[in-house]
Length: 548
Image (cartoon, rainbow, N blue to C red; front, side):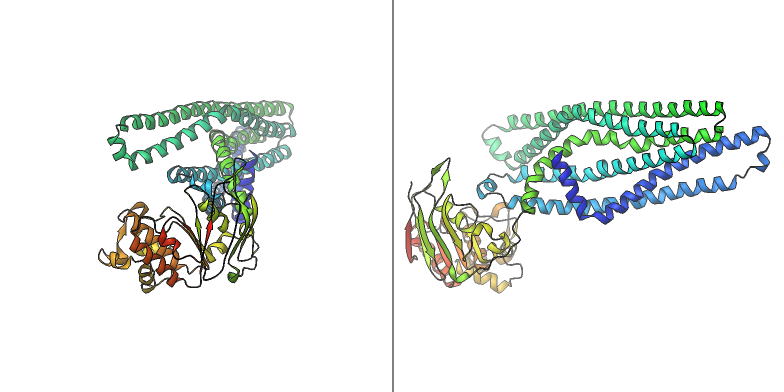
């Protein structure tokens, strides 16, 4: 619940003005509803009493009837304004929440990011943010508006009718629904958590089923996967059924509260009328106000069914949001001419160093190659150089500063890391290249492709307009690799970190690609994790990386 409260405060802070206006309109809507029903009850009873007394001809019906019309029309207008303001503010706040969440995820350690599965993460982010937009619309705003209206109505009835009737309204509608919510939350928490978890698993399995259907058919796993998918949705439906039962019980209890408070006001009013303290019409005000205030506590029913989902979503989102909030806003002075320096750095896994301490320096225009067996830690060194991992021991200086203290956008402005995985998107070749340089001209794109020996290949297949599938489908492994390298060239980096850049290329092409990279970025510092002679031949120095 603490995480949910933190998220609510963060959202409210962003859209404070719009939400305050929406809250004011929500209170006006509820207050007008109470006033409308109470005035109508008083009007009916006063008219009847005047008729019975034989003075109906002298009773002014125009003022109360005009007020009834005003309250009815005003309530409709206020409800419209409240919906527009609160929904607009909430949608904008949730949009900012998604951006903050994605930024927070980007600050996670690189190894943790590598373990993220696109389908499950996208489903989770979407579902969690959708759950949290209801925190304002279905939990906070209704609770605040209802509480304010109940307190105001109780005070007004205490002054106009009787303190006793006002006390019944206040205690009945503030205390009892709150108790129902607190107790019901304990019963709804587990099924809400199970329903959300099962739904997330089901969605991810559907995506896996669609994307991997060919492999599943080949290996005979399609029926089993379909069964597991149906089982996940079945468990979600079972948990939702339990929530529905809790919802019905909550609705019944709230109806009983409304009946209890209304009967209490009625009995208190009858006693006061018999004592001659108030008139029948005045007593009707308390009774009809009690009936109207049932609307103020009605959101408890829906909030109870969703608070478990909201709590779980906030628990998952809050850590990433806090990471984004605590990101360094300082901009240290970076000197590109100082390149990259590592002094006795190593990285520990389970308390054991992955490799012997490494010291190296790479200046502008230099190429340093990391050489060692697979798994020796070359890729880890590249990640430490750019701040993707923190060195367990030793010191790293990127352009004269600690890379962990440099904002991510500033790091990526001056340094580029090309990992072993070719990260491409569905779309044209030009769209993939312009991820690195959105304003780049077609001539600049062709120049980058020429540098990596890919221009002639693409000209014969549609050029920059060639459509690629997911993850670069339509290109061979070597072609995809070179397209990613061309994208790195477009950044004009001061430091280029390459992890086996010529993997999948023949020896002659590999030599031409490495030469083209050097010519395209003559002033850049190159740090290359290498296995092949074509990569080592370009080196000014070779640094051996060996097991500890």
